[in-house]
Length: 480
Image 1 (cartoon, rainbow, N blue to C red):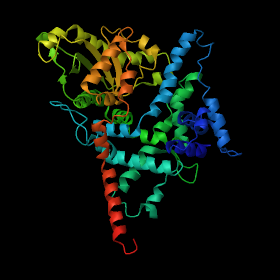
Image 2: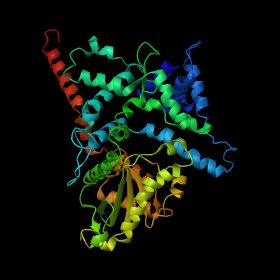
Image 3: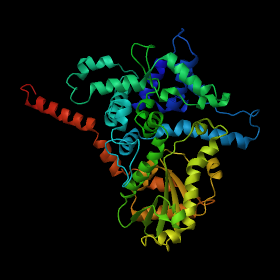
Image 4: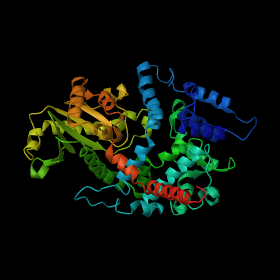
């Protein structure tokens, strides 16, 4: 069964799975849960699983979503707990891996920047190498190679292949040692270790929630000892190990509470870097400290002055919690602690805009105002009206977007962006703006910072150089 899962998710990654099979539930998140169940509860027994068995199990898995009338007799209450589960099960798997990898380098790696006048305690230069023995760029490159190779090899990967003819002469293109270390220390596990990790998450969940509890394949995608080579039953989880969320949890685990605190400053600066991509005419103004000297407070993190519109922006690096994934009773508190807190801060700056503008004449009080809460990871406010209904009351039109969505919006012209935000504010219910139309208008526009960062990955540059060299050798060959 695990081999069938690996083959199927690799085919999905290559874009080779028929649409009619997806319609019957053969999608990567269903396959991932079938693989989790096989690992946690299955045994090595015959008959062997085939593609039809996997399809049947995925179809059954897609139906395991209801909270149950006995547990929650109110249909509205059941739906409020069900929607977060379905959204956080499916939507995170539909993001571009290339954008995730580039954002990781921009936040944590060689393309990252610290804010001016900010002195970190733990996010100092070399922090990632100090806890892993790898530079972050080496780690990201290694994950990327393993992911692409596993996708090509039907879900399998072996370090022994590095000694074979397929990798001959590539030692100077990427570090074999870094790849070995990344694979063995960050991607590989055994069935017994998987079972132990899975029990930690599933045992504390109610029966309807178990399907949506954290899947340890996210953290350790490869299983050894069940096939000829280590296999990844959920190939899409491999590249997730190079995502900002994965680096966040690794840093938090090794460096403690200082890490997320300092990441908040880094993420705020990153949002400013994205805002700077918007073409003129516009002004990007950083936060201001205002009020009496003995009780002064910070304004919103950024002010974006657009034609005929002033945008107040607050940044939140906090990650979605397990309660959102499982739809448990505490899910609304996790929203309140992140996006809800951002709305409160924007409300405060909106109320005190006169005092703030007195410190910087570039903040135009005569323009209509809207607010944006920018989160490092998506909270999918647009898609979940139960979340929107439970947010803190917004005192002026406010939208909630992720960093990835901001990276799209900043590719609009200042006039397009102002118009899109203005239209969203006019359609806002209870002052919560839905930004799907604005995001749709930015579809297909490539973010220059994301593209240039991904293209700067040394592995890609070295691979291109090596390919050019080999082509040159072929052209000069007498037999060419």
